[in-house]
Length: 414
Image (cartoon, rainbow, N blue to C red):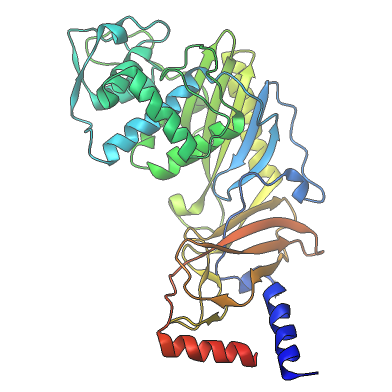
């Protein structure tokens, strides 16, 4: 065999190769990435069976682990009713974060806002209402009047605000959602899905932690307005101290809907939010206000007991540092900025194993945040449980000309 033939064969081999590194035992993991939200439950050989949920569509999502634990018709188009206000809040929170709006700023109440039917905050055109109070009116009281006042204050008109809502939905990957108003009253084509709502609610929690406390408020009314309608319709806020949101919705055609979320402490994880595991349930089309609360509670309780949360790495820590060729650094850190938590069926947390699947060779430049490789989590018996996509944690720039030349030579020898 000629030297050229040998070299070409070697090159074809490593270009097609994927390195599979098996690490035995959770204790050897220093970092990783989280499971993609859309992973089907069939990834588990024996998936826990969810309880019967009396609703048109539903979904249970482990926010901490980024995993869908169970779902029924998650991509079926449904009317969102006042769950629409989750996107309205997202757009308003984004304006606050960008400095285009302040909580103390007052907004006028237009005739259009004042005349809105359905749930109301009871504000009138003579009022100038602070943004923070309008937010409370929209979130706690589900006030359609407050919602329109916010929409007009952010975008100048309801129509322009709806455009912003749909643009944001596209950016968040809510491919099956279309908005026609900011409050959620029935309108042709005003539709979403359980999966899209889970995506929106999760991004709301992650992107605006400074504002999501409004969703835990049990009672609110604006000074000088009637006391009627001051109680938050999310009954779980009064029944379960671990529940801290999020939003209810109801119309005669949508039925009774609830996106609920809870945080519960995980033994051994430490104190504060870092020691808690968050689940999120989406229940759509239940029969009554009480039914949507009962079914949501059933889902949340089942998720916490049927699945164990396993922390495989701390935030920002690499799961692996494979070699890099032609770079200013000789290796690259692979993992996830938030660290790794995986949810596995109860009883399967002990003796987990992992496999690192990545391209080989890795050639600079590599950018922080770039998707690269997968961590496969297996049970002690070798059954696949979770596939976790990895990212580059720290940028590796391309080396100078001498470094690139030296790297090319080493690759040739390899």
